[in-house]
Length: 204
Image (cartoon, rainbow, N blue to C red; front, side):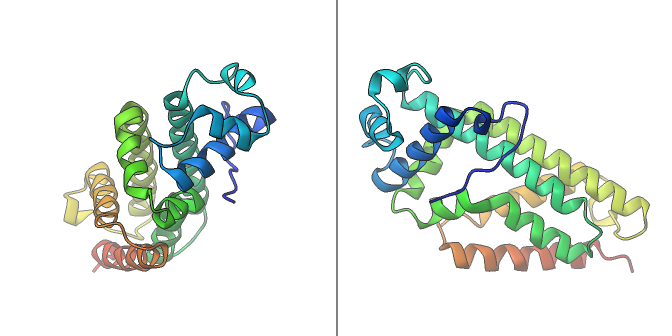
């Protein structure tokens, strides 16, 4: 079972019923895929009636959007925490990339319905994904700027543009997802990507 631990102002873990619904929905989506999962499946897995489920969410698209928001809130919190540590560049990036994926993304990669679920994220939560990606780019860019000011990295390869470099990192991470790798292969690829970026960022 995937643990969901994000702590934000809109944290669903503050409402045990909503948290139970999100956990149940994610497990159902992973097992059956989005299209084959019904509200009845989610309600049963969450230990409540379908009528009670509709008190919290209008439909499964609404639940999926909430899951997407939860993922990005958690990813931003986890990446921020990693980059706040005093770590060497390669180690910081490797741990941040790993934290960004998290258990939820590992579960998606392991699910036979992972491709469908990733497509569904953009079909029903494109606005949330776009905002979440922008938040992650901002976190990486702020870290790069701080590191550059401290003389630990150089932004010369990006002509001093930390935001452009951070956006390139995000694009590279997305590129590793297609074709969909195993969780182990994805983690190995992100570690290699961290090494490549660290080498490019190392001052002469």
